[in-house]
Structures are given as C-alpha cells and as structure tokens.
Length: 387
Image (tube, rainbow, N blue to C red):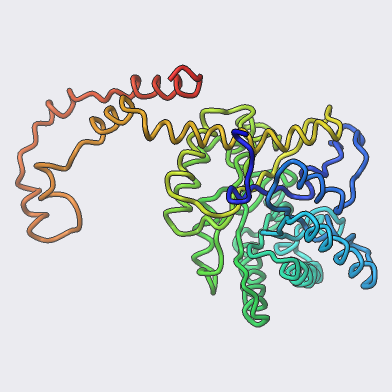
C-alpha cells in the first residue's frame, strides 16, 4: 500500500511521545499510562522502525539495580520480538526537583556532579540497548533572571560537562555520537544555546568537536520564529546533522509538538525536500504528541499520520524534481556563470584585479527580475494536488 512506512525510512518515536498521557500545566492525565513494553508493541503495530527513550522513560529514577535489570531485560525482549531498534537515547535532566536550577549549568556543584553521574549511567543504558546517537536537551539550562547566573560561567560549566562525557565515551570505547538540541525558552524563561546556530558555534569550542553535532527540532526553531529548514541546511553543511526531531508548531507559541505536517505544510515540504535531496540517512524521529483529546486508538492514528505525511511529502519532493516547468524555471533563475566565470570562485590576485577593472551596468542589473511568484505558485499547486 502506498505511503506505508518501511525500515529503510528509519522512522522512530520516543517512549515519551506515544506514551504521553495528555497531562498539561492546566489539566491532569486523560489517557492511562502504557508500559515501555506496551509502547514498543504499539510502535511495531503502526510500522515504526525505532524507539528512543530518556533514561527514566524506561527505568524509574528510584529503581533498584535488580528492578533496573528486570526492566531492561523485558524491554530487550520486546525489541527482539518486534524487530524495533533503539537508534537514540537521552537523559532526563529536567523533571526531578534536583534540577530546578539546571543540571550542567546549575549554581550548585553537587547538582552538576549528580547530573554527570546520572548521564554516565544513562549512556551505559543507551549503549547497552544499541543507541548510536546520544541527545542532550538542556531544558533547565537557563534562567528567569540574569542576576542568577553569569552566562559566560554557565557556558564554561556546560562545556566542562560535555568534555567530561566525551572523554567518558572514548574511555569506555563506545561507538557513540552526541547531538545537542536547542530551544529558546520553556520551561526556563531563557534557555542557553537557544537555536541551532548557537549550538553549532558552541560545538567548535569543545575538546572533541568531531564527536558532537546537533539534533534540530521543528517546534523549537519555530518558537523562535526561525526558518527551520535553513537551520537544518546549515547543520548539514557543517557535517553536524547527527539526528533530527520532526513535529509541527505555530510560530512564536509555547512548545506545541503537533503531528508532523499538521500546521505548516509548506515548511514541512521544504524540509522533506531538503532531506531527500541531500540524502540524509539518519533517523527521522517524530518528537510529537497526540492531542489531549485523543484516546490510545487516536494515538496510533497520530503516529501513523506523522509517517504518512512524511512519505507523501517525499513523493511531492520527487515530483518537484521531475516537474518540467518547475525545473525550467529553476534553470532560468539559477543561470550559468558564463561570462562571470573568470571573476568568481577562489581568490587570486589576478582575479581580484580583473574584477576591480570590469565595467558593470548597474542599471541593467537592477532591471532584471526573477520569476519567483510563478515558481512559488507551481509549488503551491503541487502541494494542493493539481500538478
């Protein structure tokens, strides 16, 4: 059947996504909690390839070693029974009251040490279950008042903790990469390293930047009013797109985590078109939640919808590349270097001197239009199903 997910699509969901019980700041849960094993079977039923987790999504924070081993054993059996894999894992450094002032940037050194301990144990758990990417979302790494923390000192602490954990992974011989996830605010008033661009700059200050990339999320960049695809493209160009979180979001709202493609279909199309065009081969992880009005059957519809929409948009992207009229317009717009080829490209002294001496007709340049309206309308018609 068309638009059915297959393993090669690498669609994954977190336990916290399909396992969301519908609690929000104004309301209690509306769905019974499902166990991790039940959630694995739910994801297998809807056709997912992978399942991801925070440490405490799987193992409660107060579990004993015996309980931990039993839970992991049962979870591994569910993976074996269904064929699902664990491509990514992460640590919950935001829910417990101990992290009320952050984890790696907390003003309390004992909290920072505990955060490192918790993360090392969570990395061990993730690797044990097959994870190859480890995500860091600094949900509490921020402030409500700038009187609370020196941002330079906070980033120094953040850097120190990530350097420590990189060395831990190397010392253990783990085949694991780190991916940093940005968000501008919520639950803190301001979160450090607020966008993908912030993260990319920060990574270059680490001791092992080659081990660390980014995990951009649609909703988080849209919260900041930014073009998500542009951030993804910059990460790709830098060789740092290690993972990606797909969902949807009204611009400049609280973190909504809607079903992928459910609100901003045009932005979703350009993202899918980019990922398919460049050949992104990593997990396509849906970090989204079903509506609070949903029951468990509707949660399955939500998960199927995320994957189906991606596949529909991937088909639209293929048609975009094959549409004769669209490609002719693109060829006209992009043009060829032609007579300008001697002046463009890498710098040489001779090229610079020739370019300085070249006469340009500035008025003629100003009269040249680009048929972007025509091109955009063709894209709209493609998405509306009339091309």
